[in-house]
Amino acid sequence: MINRDISLRLAAGRGRRVTQLGEAAARWGGQVPEDPGITELADLLEAAATNALDRPGDSGHTTRALLAGAVEDLRAAARLGGLLPAVTLWHLQRAIDQEHTAHQQTVPAQRQRHDR
Image (cartoon, rainbow, N blue to C red):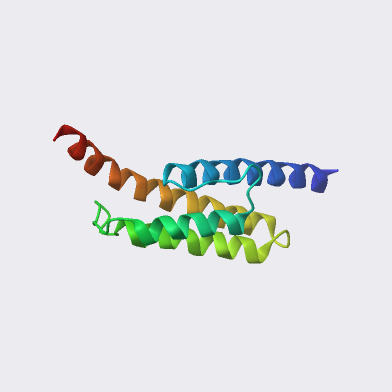
């Protein structure tokens, strides 16, 4: 019974993270399908990384490097599939964190463009 509960929680966590990453890909201009897979999300964020302006943020990492890191974590999660759900969730969360930092770096630049 305990294993079943853990499996259900991990599946729910995976679903939430995939939804968050879909929203992130859309924020970067990607055309997210209705029920995206992890590989599709990696492809969308990879395209965003290619088009991103390469400016360093507070962490010293560039937007492009952060998005590339998110893509790397998504590809790792896709390779794992359902074999190691907890590790897959770790990679998905890491991708979310990197994308979020990359997005935060672009917000001040977007405000500056609008103020002109």
